[in-house]
Length: 245
Image 1 (tube, rainbow, N blue to C red):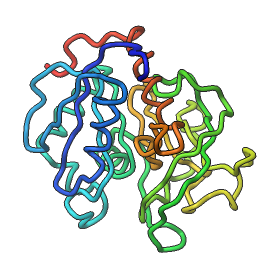
Image 2: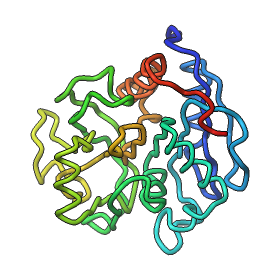
Image 3: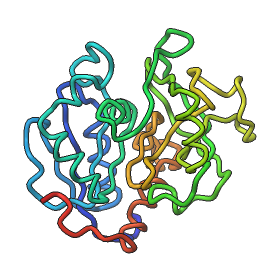
Image 4: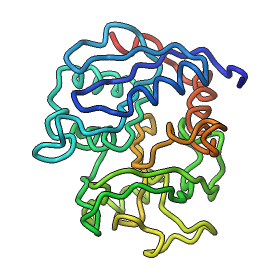
């Protein structure tokens, strides 16, 4: 059993069609032994949480486009308010798409360049280790994390891409196993090989790979656990007072 780094309270947003919510819950509750609640998309955020997780899945069946309907779920008003007060928010896969639709992160997701659903392990390279989500990692560190998406082709205009680079908002890039960031290592066609980005303040992260699917030794890979452990270690240096009120 892993030693507890901090005592934190997590909330996992559940939309109709979420299918990675229980995976996230298991890691937070049973692996990291932290307090965690499921939060239904029609509810309000009534407790004080340290971190909100928007899990992967197919919210509202990905109708219109992934995340486009979830963005209007009542709970998203609370998520936006929480993030605005500095609360930690992580969106994984479909959760990343929801965060972009809600304008908490810039850019949009298009269909994979192959026009096919992709489910496989990929290598991601840490581009910014100074965020609360990567503080236990090093710049240039390589992680093996699975992806599972049909719309993971990150797109933004050149002005936005330049801003992401200037502000060090690109947190993860797809890379080869030896760390080469190239077209060959890009599974979906994402601009600049982007696999994950954060907002300017650094408290909101969106990533397409699924760290919750590689956070236990029984799965043969614990690289994803480093991201959740980073969140725990960041807690002591952040002010989490009354963000949800």
